[in-house]
Image 1 (spheres, rainbow, N blue to C red):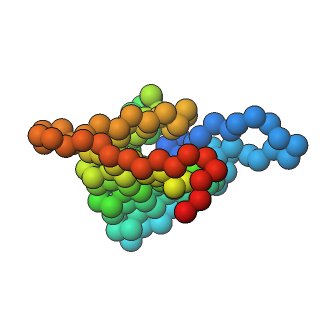
Image 2 (cartoon, rainbow, N blue to C red; image 1 turned 45 degrees about the vertical axis):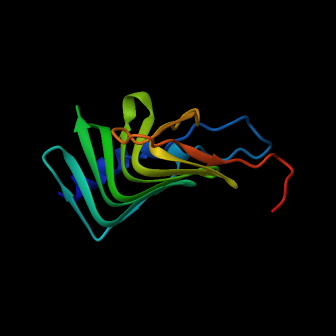
Length: 164
């Protein structure tokens, strides 16, 4: 059973993979080529895939998915969807996304974060009820909370070159 859990977690590397930018003199390996590290208070194989519970964390390269619980769903032997719930954080070298729940769909490389969402990029902050974030492109779309009258997105943006 441990081998099956580890195989499922290894497939989770797709969640944290971000394509590399332009080549530099000293090329860094892409995140998907780096080791996957996991941590949780418990892990188990489930009929649909795997589950990490209690301070669940998956790291690969410079990217991190952290939540109270992380579940992966397998389709045809590969991870097709990952759901993180409770105190969700998805962190890349340039963004931090916080929410109550996140669903990552491997086929379209998007993560949908819901519930008091906060997106930060440097000092810039955007808040709302639902964020759709493309892991490959970094494109983000924030929406107000659905079903709540008058809820709007809010943000603070600093022009480049300004100081505190």
